[in-house]
Image (cartoon, rainbow, N blue to C red):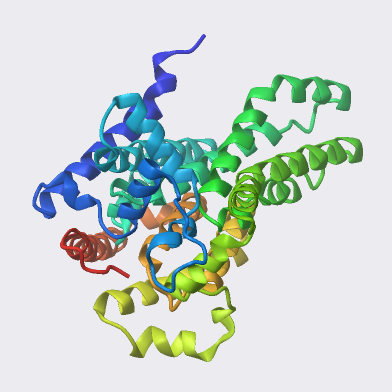
Length: 398
């Protein structure tokens, strides 16, 4: 029987997303339409009119470049607009905000499964709320859907693949059958993940990470069965990405149209910037204030994740976060928009940080720790307010 207590994470997630929207509207002047800027306009147009690709692709960020955006978020926008009978100009915001509810809910559920103390969960929520690009979660961007799908994928994969070492293999086979709903939900979230952002393809391997870390000491027959199930979840999760490629091939005769549109329209090419000296010099010497701040936050994020990983906190989730940040750096052009690209990475880092905090209970007896943490969070919130105001005025936020 489902109790009201089961809906508590959802209610809290809804409350956080609503409060976040109120704060963003307050600091940006209260105009809901101002939350639709830049890529939000592309998502709105795709949701309303479809891709409408012009071939050959024009050498500008117009026309055929609509195909440079994955279909997951526009489909979600269209669904929200249809359900609520509202124009796509409003649906594109509402879709992001509803996905933000899922993002906050899954974050709480994952922290609960890791047995993080309630006080620490509150602290981690405040940390994520203070992320300089967090206003994108309630703006007309795909960040909230991508992050919600990612956290949901992590959560349901854990539920689907968890096992008790005391169980006999025959009983575990039956347990796999009763876990069919969790398996379907894991695949479904993975499908949304890979259909929303290209980087989701790199994250579909997470079930294999989970097995490698969580099933090292289980009996061989059970381990083989779990590897097979994990591989199946990963493979089917790629269906969102594969469906987009099939659509490009059947509709326009070119399966790689997404990459061509990015190359022609925005000069975006996948290249290993992580191993280029220019990446590191750009961090400190090129760009405006928001670009420099975004790049510095990226470097600190990478360093923090490496430190936590080598301390072996969070295992598979930490490895997933490292993979995501490396793939993001390699695949982004000139490190643009890194603050919003870091949102799902920081979401993955929070459970790892929570496990580390759990092992350092002495920290929370130190007034110096709390004062230092408060100062950092106030600084990050101030940066977020600056970014949100710039965004609402149609200025570029890196």
